[in-house]
Length: 148
Image 1 (tube, helix red, strand yellow):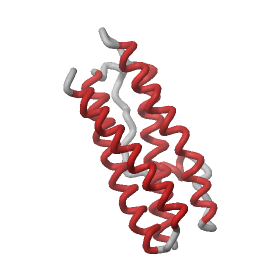
Image 2 (cartoon, one colour):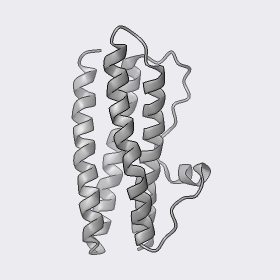
Image 3 (tube, helix red, strand yellow):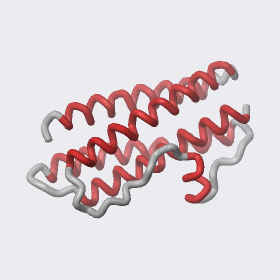
C-alpha cells in the first residue's frame, strides 16, 4: 500500500504544480490572442485545482497523510516549476503544459495499475476519470500549438 500512496502523492503533487504553473500562465499571457489563451489557461487551472482535494482525500482513505506543506508536496512532484521571466511566448507556455500533462498522465497510469492490483475500485474510477480528462487536455493543448 505504501507504493500506492506514494504514487498517489506524486499525482497530487504533479497536479498542484501544473495547476500553479497554468495559473501563472493565465495571469501573464500576452499577445494578439490574449483573451483566447487567458480563458483557455483559466479553464485548465480550474480543472486542476478541483482535482487537488480529491487526490488528498483518496490518500487519507488509504490511511496515509496527505502532504501538509508546499515543501513536502514538491518533494513528490516530478514536474519543474516555471522560473522564466514573463517573456514566455504562448508557444513556450503550451509546450511546457504539454510536457507536464504527459508526465501527469504517466503518473496516473502508474497509480491506476497499482490501485487495480490493490483492488481499490473507487480509486481506480477516480484515476480513470483523471486520465480521460488529461487526455482531453493533451488534445486541446496539441491542437492549440498548431496555431502558434
